[in-house]
Length: 205
Image (tube, rainbow, N blue to C red; front, side, top):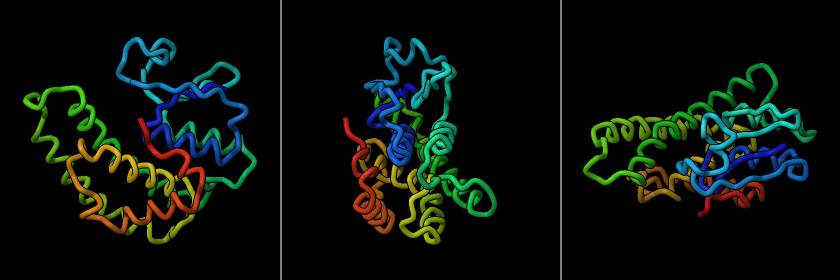
């Protein structure tokens, strides 16, 4: 298999954590991308969507979208599953995952705009709207995490990826998560302390 990833992407980190958990690293060629926006980047030559993460299976077929890739890797490995296969546990974990993914999808365009455009071209009104949505969602996230404690599943993994990335990009997200949601930040820190696969994949340039 081949995996295109970035060390700064929370979506890619989620996949890397799943890969490590299922102990599939020796079966996967890791192809690090330094800029997903660069049209000359190798991943843009073979990936029609130009997005990361992306996985090429041994048969040559490609998988796009972090959750789909995670589910594929989770099924391919023999270790305990990160995505429950059926019933209420599955829907609870996926509901948590999608809440967190929604916050990331809200925030990514704002961060990209601040990184790539001059300030006078920012869509400020839209940024305020999305930030308000994120604040409401962080409040819900605190409640949604409570039943899981420090359990490792695709929902809690994605939450750690979001919270660490948010602080990693604090100068661009424009909202101090540590000041307003210290319990979430402390929870993510404890998860990193408990699980080496999380600590080893924290965002970095």
